[in-house]
Amino acid sequence: MTERDSLPSKGNDASKSNGSIPEDAKENVTTDWVRPAINTLPRTLKRSEVVARQLVEDVLNRGISPGGVLAPESVLLAHYGVGRATLREALRLLEAQGLVVLRPGPGGGTVLSSVDASDLGSTATLFFRLAGATYRELVDATTMIQPWLAELAASRPDHKTAATELFEAIDATDAVRDEPQGVFRTGPAFHATVAKLSGNPVLSTLTNALDAIFTKQVLSGIDLTPRQAEFLDAHRGIARAIAAGKRAEARKLAHAHAADLQQYCEEKAKQRLDQVVEWL
Image: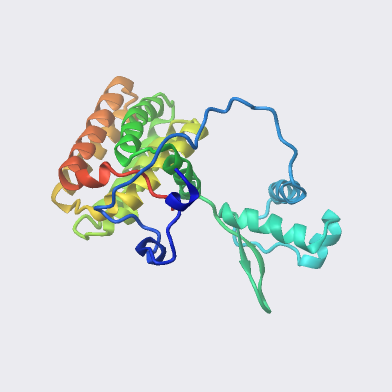
């Protein structure tokens, strides 16, 4: 593919779009962009990347909470011993990751943000896009991982705590079950709770990132209210199995629920599932 073929011309409608892919667009995506990590030797970091990492470590060591404001630019420049351009590039790197918000003008400054798995999801969509991954493949991945997380959650000894957290998430969704958008505000909390209870922060964060992409780019365009009662019942069954420490049952129910949701998406948004993941 030449540069002329791969980039839209000034008169192309794609250059006027908001970045989304039309439903009937023919996508030409190959997997040539993303290769296995053959060279795993660390590269030399740019000075701005070093400063960004130092800033993160300082925030963690000082226990600064989201909403906290970093020191003024003059103080940061003196502390890290770099120029203004390097410091601002470091802050922009952190802003792109969702860790800080840069507020210009009087009374502004660098404010710490509360990052979540959707920030990881936004970054991952670029790599999924370049790899040619479709939404169906994204759903396949979560369908395989979620039963595993449910089984791990059922292995925890603190069953009472697990039950409390899971049923609180279910009650929050049940309260807005008749609102078309209510499930998108509250529904992900149940799966996020199961992931957290798995005790594996890597799997938990990864799964929540995939769920965030799926919810925003696929589920948000589907009316779930006709099946909401059934999905909530499935959540209750999974929660009871986890709370009782029934690992095999939790895994089985979680798989059935994930497969059921995937089938519903096949019925309501098959064309969408066939599309390559968009870069958020």
